[in-house]
Length: 298
Image 1 (cartoon, rainbow, N blue to C red):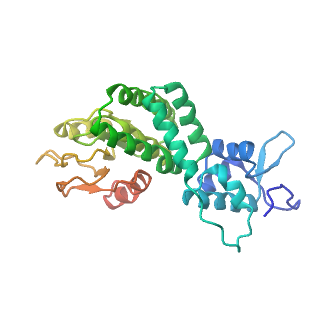
Image 2: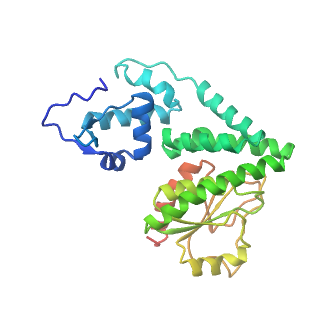
Image 3: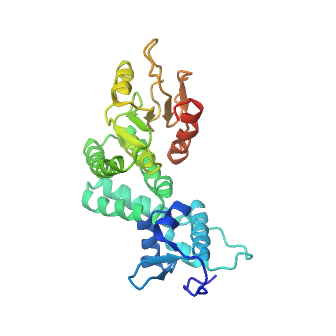
């Protein structure tokens, strides 16, 4: 399929906002795919506004299929133009690996200026779920494993401060723009810091939730009052540390809304009132809406 905009005059065309809604790819990413990699080439109105035809939307869906297979966006251009009937060689993960190594090196060096640039670049080039699954979650996994053996408080605190500031700005504006259910997000017991909570907050915000973020854990017996005062629809604990303490809600003081946990399973069983959502953050956040429906909150 050619990526040239040569559609017949009567072809239905869609503005970028509608294409973003249909494909789940935000407009910043669509523009980056066009400008940096030439992956899509929409038509333009006389005033320069982008218009996409159905074959552009189909092409975007094919790009997403490659990204979901773990192919970096820099390699998609060569793959997307191959005939669909031809079996494509398995993609290499070298580019993802090199990006992860670069991020870890920058965290070790406390180079937050460069980290901030790459943070924004990753969110512009990839759907958020892909950026988290392929870059940020593996990087934090590797760092957490290393820090358990050899703590590096300076690197951890600098990385946390960067993510806290960037995620905080995003949540501030996103919370004002949506009327979705409010999710109270907090670290799970035993977590040393907010890295996992910050990633979960990004993902929940993109799914249309308002997010109240506590990057330091609340005492479990304080949750019911916090839920009531915030009018929260759900409590979500997030964490990645292994091992972590079992999550047991106080008798007679459990929140009146669903309680979820995303992160690796600890050795001890959790309270049966806590819904275990798994250790894949994008998939865990995707389970929130069905859980809220089953619980009668939505």
